Image 1 (cartoon, helix red, strand yellow):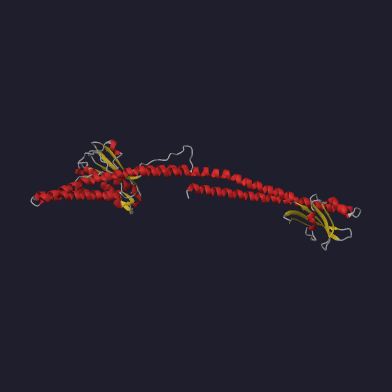
Image 2: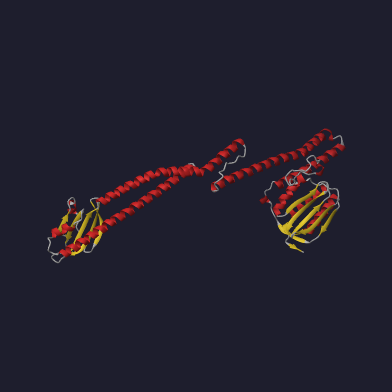
Length: 452
């Protein structure tokens, strides 16, 4: 069953049941009020008759006296204590009341009695009869007119219920259309996306700000995010394929060369093996970086510990000095501690230091200092620098400032992107300040745990 049908059915049933309950409650309330009103009126007539009969005494014949106070649509009778009727007067047209069950009640009573399918008001009051006996004056009144009015009310309420179903069904249909319209629009859009492959959006009303509008807006935002992610993924796969294509081509070429001439030319054999090994190492490094970048932020496993920042920087610089045989100056302005993931902070420093050494032949300076209540590690080189227009893009994956640059530097355009994701994972900030032709300053900013 479709959602629209469910809304129509459930809403209509709910409204109809509610309407029926209201009508039933209205009917029984009105019926009770009318019958109680008739009963009170009959009681008033009985009291008036009792007063008149008692005041008249024996001067007027009993039958004439009773005829004076008989109700317009009923019967007046006197019942002795043994249940016998000593006097009875009926109005014309109510002769059937002669067979009305007679009971001596001993006390004053008033009730609605059903007789021959018609409600009757029965009121009994004690009376001192002419012979001094305590008898009972009974006033019985036929309420057929009231009963007929109640039947008319039943018909009216039933008709009202049936007529009211029409606007109920119409309104529920309009409500269901209003509710399901954004959902239907989403379904059409999703089907169109599936067929065409295009990330389409839902047209939203400009005036409403309800939940349905928010749902449509969220859908559009999700489509936009999916489109952006798809484009990034497409670009990522394309760039990764391009990066892997070159080393694979080199390996394939040298392998073919070894197969043809490697057994006879020892120098060629050594050259080919070194080239294949070099490209294999390059592919391994690229693959490792790609795997790291494929991780989502929540998948980074953070192992926090207290890190002596100057000590970590000094150890890292010593490794670079031994590996690159380069001059690297360390300036420690302040001692500081930081609670973070030691290995990931070290990896960020390695990436920034590696870039400084690749693109600068001059000595590199590393400064550990505090700025505006934050710790900072500065890596300052005097290399080729980065053009201003490229600074905002250097953290994108596979982006290179110089697209024609040879692969002698070993860069893939992944290092800074990886550094940015690692920095976000451990809660530090990295930034670049560069002037083309003069050099670059890379900075790692972090909140201090303790300063000395």
